[in-house]
Amino acid sequence: MSGQAKQRGLATLFMALTLLALASLVLLAGSRQLVLAHANAQNQQRYHQALNYAEEGLLAGQSALSQGLPLPSSTHYQLKMTDLGANRLRLESIGVYDGHQVRVQRIFMQGADEDPPRSALTIVGDLNLSGAIKMISDKPVDMTVDGAVTLDGSVDNIDTLQSTGDIIVRGNQTINTLHSNGNLELSNGRYQTVKAMGKLTLTGSAMVEQLARVNGNADFLNSPGGQTAVKQAQVKGNVLINTGGAPLGALETEGKVDIQQFGGMASLKALGDLTIQGWGAPISGAIAGRLGYNTNNRDISIQVDPKLQLKLQPVPPLQVTRPRIDAYDFRHEAHYRFEYDDKGRVLVTVRQIHGIPDGSYRLGIATDSQQPNHLCRELDASGRCLAGNPSYLICKGYDPNTSDCFAGSAPGRWKINGTTMAPGVLWFDGDLEIGSGVYHNTFIATGNIVTSGQHVSYAVNYAGQIGICRNSDFPNSYPLDYCPGGIFKGRPIGHAVLLAGGYRNGKFRGGNITLGASTQAYGNVWAGNMLISGGSTTIHGYISAARQSNDAGLRHNWGGSTTIDLSSLPDSFKPGVDPGQGSNNGAKKTLTALPYSWMDSGVGS
Image (cartoon, rainbow, N blue to C red):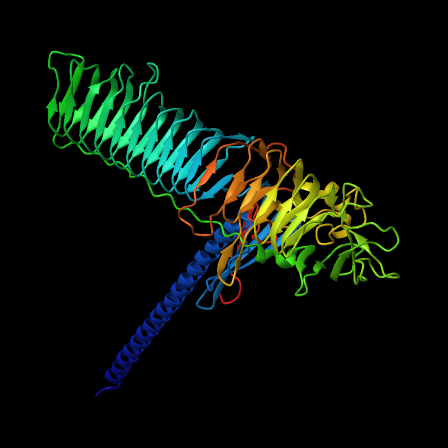
């Protein structure tokens, strides 16, 4: 082979090797790009999932803060809240996924407290109301009965009455909405909306001015003076109409319709048969079943459409959470706890009162003034405080020198007769009877509570700064936990003015609250069992009667007049708060998100 041929061969070989090397580099670069792209895709997926968790946590935290609840915890996110002052707070949420973290935050402007939604009257068991309940409030309030309701009396200014049983109304009412898990029978009153899981029967002058929704059958037999008997009705069962000359609005039903007499109807849709007796009145609409009417009446225009469809939403069942009322839950929150020891002697345990050391005391006569109603560590044989030891006045009798506020008390049965007591939460082991006087106290008894005479009592939170921290009768004996630094700060149990009944060895005892005819109660009234009102009673708060004795034969029979006045409430009193809620008082707050936020991928990105 010549030299030139060898050179050409080597050149060709060199070129081939070069091309192979370049191809290998291209393949290597491509594989590296694929690896990088895959890694980036994984990082992107981790980032987005962590971001989703962070935003999920932000929403959960906002919901909790708006309801006055603690921040939730989760393996998907971590939450932190910082008070920025001036009613602003910062909520941070760190989303975590596969080692990757994303941090988001939002700043909120915090509005005023709002009462959590709860019924102004919560009754467990059947209610027979022959008297009158009057609501005075600048906001709509509800009434919930876990049982059947019969109203022969009147309920004034209730927005919604809801019941797990039947509702029968005979008296004249001003109620916007009725909701029953059973049947509704209305013979009087005007209502905006009525909802029944069972049957609806309207008679007399009852009117539904907006909407009637019924899962069962509906009988419209009412004739409200020529006005529209029902503006709109959605009925899943059959409908019977005999309203005389009263017209109806729009009717939709999945059942059949039998019209005996009426003043006309705006529109009709029915999946069953339609029967119009007699001459009939103007009506138009469509049905899927058979049609029977006087064909000579040209004001009747009904189309038969076998394919007609209706999708009426059923009335959902009312879910009621029963309150749990137990005086023993608040035994250690009392400022003065009244009990009898095993020798039949009065024992008063004091907690967190300015000027009185914590501990156990006897009730007796002061050594210096010789006045009753004093606390001291030990008594002599005559019931007087031992000389040389301090004593503390806790109650003022009608006659400061002679009147024993607790005269007539015995183990398990307490009586208070005086003009006033030292402010704070009072807890009694047994039944409690409170006579005339003006009190700035939350009264708690493990048994029953009875008020009589000209009785006026203010719950601790209702009394607030003036009644508790600056009480003119007891200026130096105020609750330290409600008056830190001399400034009033309420606690949940302080919303109750009367609370009765408790569980002992798993069995509920007591729980009846009987209000005298002239009682003025400023605060929530919580009866663990039954509430009995003598009439002409005013309660400036919410009412609960929980029937925790589980005696199914007990019925709430209210024959007197009771006024619930929720107007002009002090800022320290939140009637919708249950006594057992946390220190945030269960209050809801309005949260307005400010229009800026930031996010940071954080570590692990």
